[in-house]
Image (cartoon, rainbow, N blue to C red; front, side):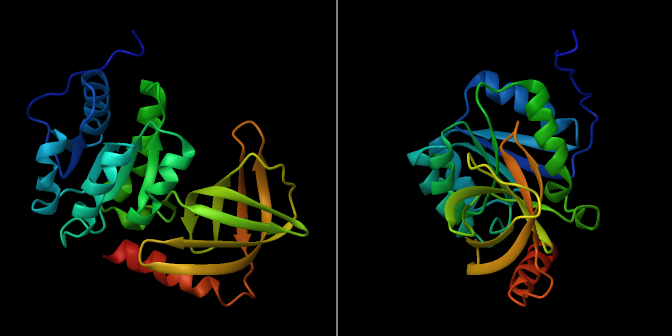
Length: 232
């Protein structure tokens, strides 16, 4: 009973739209209810109709991670209206998701899709979708990050970014207080290198947090990108 989806009243007012592209019916139904709980209207479309993303304004898009996603997202990002919309991937491997990072992939719904996890992700990102930027200072974003920790070099994927730091996911074991230098590129931000320190780590979820070194002026480029992202 606790996992049942609650139908919303038809009088519910929506202040944003999310496009669900080429999703199976079960995923489509679950995500539709999750978004609608936060006042986000859902528009479903097949791949051949995804050209609407180049013509109509959407605040968010959910698309299955895979080869077909690139063409759809390239068209959407080429649209002035949707150049900054929030993009969610569905399924696929971490490597597949990173292939979409150049389109500004923000977050990924894991498969098999489970309602509690899906609802948690929508809740965590809804403020960006609804343009309530003042209440949200971290930007969910998926991109490949190179990490140098002493003599050790490894690759991680980003989870969230702020002007002061970044959370990452990796199989690599790290420790609190460890100095690092990270390198990454984002949509409209050329590759940047920044020194930082690991300030927390969660082995269960294979995630850790890096605080940027306040003495490293290169972090100003990240702050400028974050400010631009939130103001556009």
